Image (cartoon, rainbow, N blue to C red; front, side, top):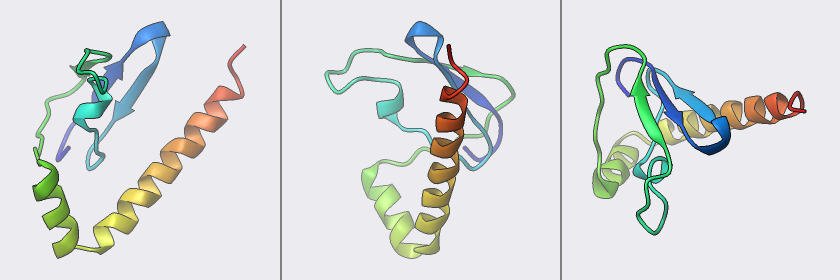
Length: 89
């Protein structure tokens, strides 16, 4: 996302929010067998960048440090999810 805040909501009340310069993928919305698994709701006006696989790979090839930033972002998100899970009863 170039700008904005979107929330993906799935079963059992699971919710994940994505903000500016975070990524979410088609697979976050649809299961491998092409069933709808989450809804996406814009919480603010959005500006999105759509890339297919080839476009994404080309972007990484042209800007290799972007991959390091994406991995760091994913690491922070996973660490936060793990911390949040400790408080679920």
